[in-house]
Image (cartoon, rainbow, N blue to C red; front, side, top):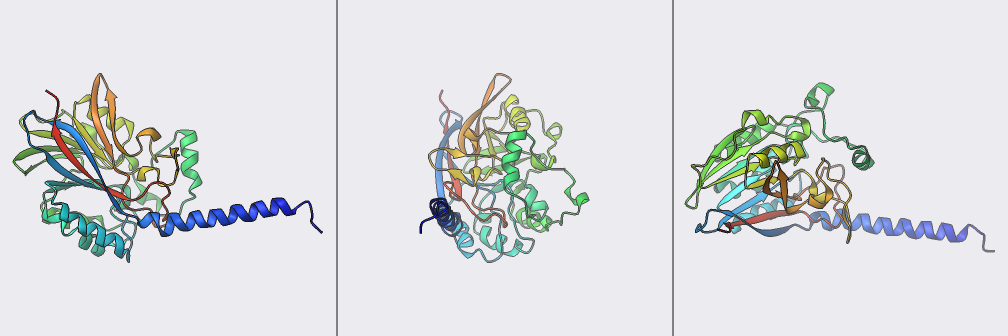
Length: 313
């Protein structure tokens, strides 16, 4: 005999089955569906030829991720003029050799980098619902001294040493320069604002006008950092950290950004305005996930090839 509980139980079973299928797709397929996105940004001086900048971000390397490693290696085939790494390279303290093997072909090209919190500290198991609560409460970011709370460190210095040996410019709360493709590029970078390691006072002053182009680089696109770079009139800011929302609703978009930027600008090219000035902002959705939440939904892993072109006269 059919009971009054049969329909609700059937619906629950159907919902559970749909959830399992979605989870399987998000973890087994989309999180490994790597792709290249291309954008054009008009920021070069009039008459300049295009400059090709490859941005890689949020790799979150875990030992054994062979498909990701092969895909990263293949990006060298693009032959970019400049590589910018916007941090969070690790999600496994033993993953440095595989990370460096993956990036080895790209390290043959001129490059620069900043670090994110996951370069410095090992990932921790965290309730994903806390990200939604942060959106509601407006509280974001972590303590700048996570080591004091017992969080294990990652061997970030091994990554730094390898990047430096390859000639990539360390932009940790400092400035640097790269010559490539006939351009002199001035770079200004910050350490990760998500763990309150950014020190803008140490790099303030705006673009270097004797360079052909000035770029701003940071891991997490917190508003205080975007405001500072934009007020100083940097034409383009490159950031990562958000994972593009990571788990998005199809035809709606991201629910969270893991920082205080709005969800409308969680990934891709947009503008930022501050003190009467306007900068281009590019936020990479990244190509990895935290090892404890290895899923992506309606937000595939990516790297971006930005073609910089001449700005309107």
